[in-house]
Length: 155
Length: 190
Image (cartoon, rainbow over all chains, first blue to last red; front, side, top):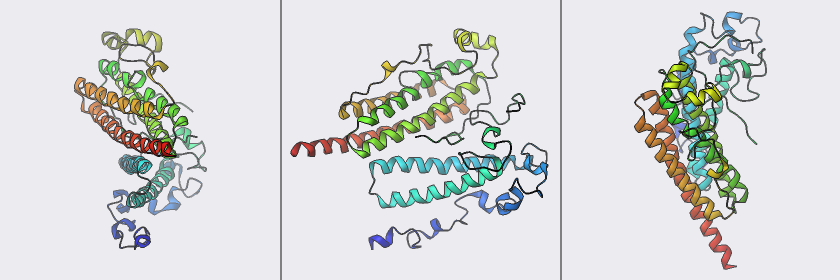
């Protein structure tokens, strides 16, 4: 029974936790206007994507600004849950339920980070290898206020 | 080795400048019970821990403290970046401004620079872990004093988060001390 209970594909463990379409996981996942649902439109190498669509500051994309903050909040929430569980596992390394939860949060976090990086540029090294200039440099750094007018600089 | 995620562990969005508050809050950046002290203490103690579990917790909490250091820096930066030089001087940050403009530097609330005298790495795991537990309590108390000094909800919000993390870290160090104590006791039997 024990080895069945920690197999996370076992729906008996938690049906809700294996359903990635479960809105509990992320409001962004139920928003059909979310560009994640159309990968072609966020691929910066795709010539079909106009310069307007790749410039997150352009008037056309400003409507997405709200969802950038929402997505970052989700990442911070899920990321925090993972960190907290990670520390717990350091002192309770045999807690199978915690291990399972940690796995779910970590996988969900990875998905959210990939989604964010595809739309807004890399937030971990290697996440965006297509954009030119290097998006790791160009997206705002975490200590900057998003709505503050910094001097426009090249790099 | 370290990988950096380009985000804050907890959001910081300060709307109103307040150099007076910044002068107090900077103590959690470069002061005796601040995040730099915590991080460097744990990251240097981890090498002499006797069990893998203790090495893990020192490593991981030390790493999280770096993320907290970043949050404190962001709070201070956003509190002073829109303030005038006159406002900085009136708040008692004239000396700081002369030395650093509006840059971040490792000082306490009265301007004393950070020193390794704030930390110890005794090698004796019981000494180290009890220092770590005390450090977390000191940090928790400091955040409470800073919350008492603040009236801005944008500031109080991240300070509350940081205070809660200190409580959890204290808990984890307590567990580690117990585990290491048991381990050392069994070692003595053989």
